[in-house]
Length: 186
Image 1 (cartoon, rainbow, N blue to C red):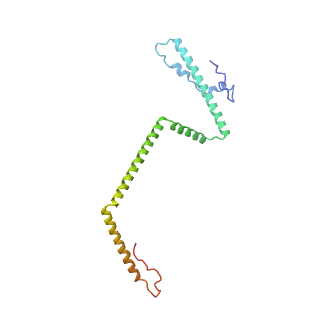
Image 2 (image 1 turned 180 degrees about the horizontal axis):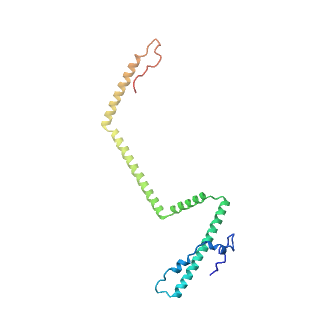
Image 3 (image 1 turned 60 degrees about the vertical axis):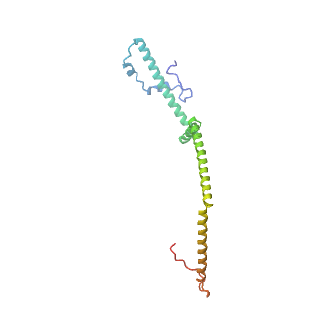
């Protein structure tokens, strides 16, 4: 195993300074020494495990320092490149959306909705055809033709009476060149 004085971060601008800064990571070796050993372990096994635990905790602290240095360096590089946190968020969202689109659940849902849309479209088309056919049948029925004839008769009577009433409103002297005022409320 490497000694703690060697620099693990080979790309660090602080290469060689890592061992000096390890004192700021707390390692609670007193608490681990106070814990009661499980039954069935000899004193030598317990001591060996405690020693290994201390080494692992020390490595974890070192890795945390290396990670913090890498994150600072990454932030500096992003700042120099003009990349903002919003750009990172956009990239993460884009990747996440792509991951969703290629997932099996999304594909199955999309396929199901597409089939449902096609079936709905076909059903609405059939309903429209049926309504159109029924309206055509109704228009060709004797009842509708009789109703149409009556409306036509009423219309011709109304147009005829309107022509008769407007002839008497115009005066031959020319004083009535203005159209008649319609004072009806509607």
